[in-house]
Image (cartoon, rainbow, N blue to C red; front, side, top):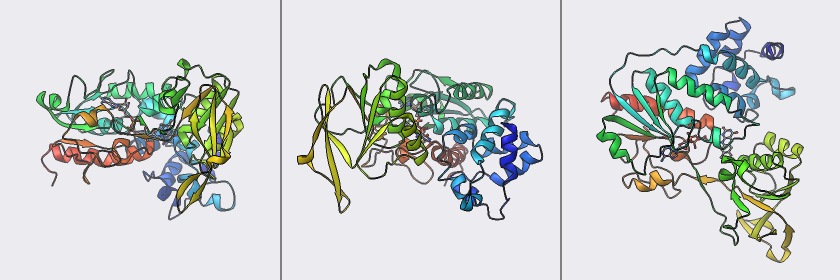
Length: 406
Ligand SMILES: Cc1cc2nc3c(=O)[nH]c(=O)nc-3n(C[C@H](O)[C@H](O)[C@H](O)COP(=O)(O)OP(=O)(O)OC[C@H]3O[C@@H](n4cnc5c(N)ncnc54)[C@H](O)[C@@H]3O)c2cc1C
């Protein structure tokens, strides 16, 4: 691993205008990271990476590097780009436990963070380091959000999230697991208990429905539910996956690892929405793709597959060409929306037409003292985007609690 990483580091041209950094949504200082590695200042590099992106280890694994840092690397114009993700992963992973975070003295102010996904973790780490007493409320039994309950183990080993759990503990952050805010306890209860500000990072967990006959049958699951715990589903041998984004690739590849022999992805376009790397892996795993096709009905042991074409941006089904295809289980993966219990129960929180939380440029929701970011605000996006936005919102929450926010 080390030799490979150094070989890659030596290929970096240290461009004056580093395009890799521009391509990174969180603007990681990649040339400086490589510079420090080459000078054997690995801990310094790790400190720098963590300060810029507390989820650096995870982003080094799950980001869409081919479109971001590596997709912008000058070396990639004529040959292979520098393997930036491997370098970042080596540094962040090998130093994580030794990273020292500068902690401001306690300021006596309490902050409530709802949701322990990338957005909530980022807010918690930043505000704890600034002296706030942070409590995270998490509906699941463990931290991580989609990183733990969505992205499969074969792509992101859960041990990395257990290491984050320890880090949060070291920073004095309290986590209250198995506890949904919006049920017995509301945001008002948190304010009544003295929290100065509350952050909502509850993500996007409500599956979008296809609205076709058979969607409620026992041989059907939404990808976000299936991936939560694939072991409890009995798939049979033939699985149809409807949708072709990254979550669909995860569902299809997981189904293969759970014994399905014949997995078909139905994709309504000519090119899947998932990143090319994920599609390539799905194909290597043996997943079949049916392009320009959808499913119009689910039956007990089959699906009705229907060709589609596009007219002025609208999808048109060619129903006369429909075919009945044998199938034991159907996984629907056409994205998620944030409309969960909390955002619907708290009537002071205004929602957009798309079901996302409405916030201003500081991340303030329509409920005073309540901020939000991540998928609940942006709709389903990525880990790095949740972290990037949350860094800014952490600054604004800090200003708000000091009475400095305009
Ligand atoms: C299957 C799948 C694969 C993906 N793969 C990738 C990938 O490879 N790379 C990438 O960058 N992005 C990927 N994404 C997207 C990425 O995971 C999300 O954009 C990111 O996790 C959003 O972070 P978040 O903190 O906003 O929300 P989440 O990660 O959804 O976390 C929200 C947390 O809030 C908790 N919660 C919700 N409601 C409540 C409540 N009322 N009270 C208490 N807790 C609550 C949830 O249990 C959850 O832990 C994937 C998404 C899916 C669905």
